[in-house]
Image (cartoon, rainbow, N blue to C red; front, side, top):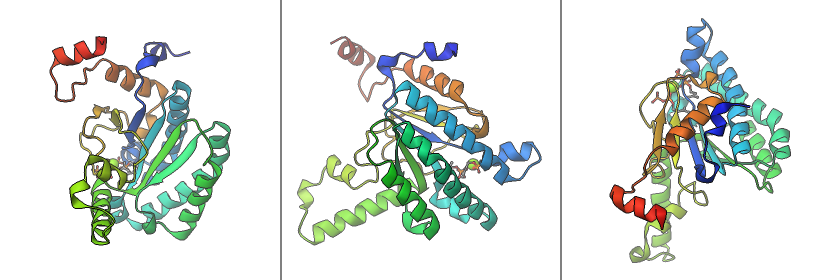
Length: 252
Ligand code: IPE
Ligand code: IPE
Ligand code: MG
């Protein structure tokens, strides 16, 4: 049993953890291998972290697997990633089901090749009734794509007379995001030493605690996750208020 996991306060777990799984390419290059070798090994980290979150009782885990900008990578890498995705889902869906994990996808599914869409739809259906961890894969996703989509759909509703402009509030906007139904992430982790958001959950991360580590994604394991959670639990989340205010509220 890991000593780190015992330092986690189970009463104050983040409900939703979001991860930018970065560094597969560099991990492979450092080993003199092709970038796809890194992606291949990244799957082992996904398995390990999904298991870690499920064991802890985290309710939502969002993994940034492929951004809308990643379509501009060399074709062989894009094709390799799509194949890896489809094969992984096919292989893992049974174990997701056994562990009561429900799969969700967010992103521009219209960009995905048909065979990938089909595989995903099946996995979504197979895990639909599960009530444990919600595993949200961000695929062909970007925050700007999502916001643009939301604005367009809200505009259609207004135009058709179903929605009154005056009635639009934060809740309305949230309903038009791909994440409606999920709480905002309290903790966002990015691996591999880059300090940026790269178009991930731009709206939802407004008050997330950000955690950056130099560990490359293929090396990221449960203990690294525990370290991030322990770090998160040591922070004071003020949401614009003063430290005195939030300390009083905590005690109330
Ligand atoms: C993250 O690793 C995986 C995807 C973006 C699909 P990268 O492929 O970005 O690896 P680096 O950042 O080039 O090392
Ligand atoms: C962000 O990583 C996207 C994913 C991890 C899926 P990138 O490697 O694409 O981001 P940049 O290019 O370094 O900002
Ligand atoms: Mg990268």
